[in-house]
Image (cartoon, rainbow, N blue to C red):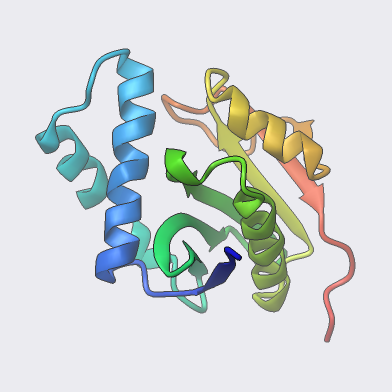
Length: 164
């Protein structure tokens, strides 16, 4: 029997860094329609602001499938009630095994623990698999809450009342 284990983890552990590196490789390669270079991946990691994905400003989560690093995702508190979902990634070999569903559920739980009542995200139109995942989990298209070269569509979800 195979199983998932997901938990908050520092963004800079070897497993978390490897997952973030694979995330940048995939999204950059898809965007440029060519393999990303090691330098481009390094630059993406160097400038990604992952240090903010730690309490109290955020959280980073790593998912393991049978002990093997397989998934990650982050949260960044934008203000006292809104969390931004970021760097959601599953390595291709682990897709289709319900890990994305479990990852989103845990990230939403962690957002509530940080005090968020709303979760938002931005993504690109070409990341159709990710967009389908978000819609399946109740995320709806919202007006842009930020700008940037890769912000093509934004989604949001009400997380309900924050326990307090």
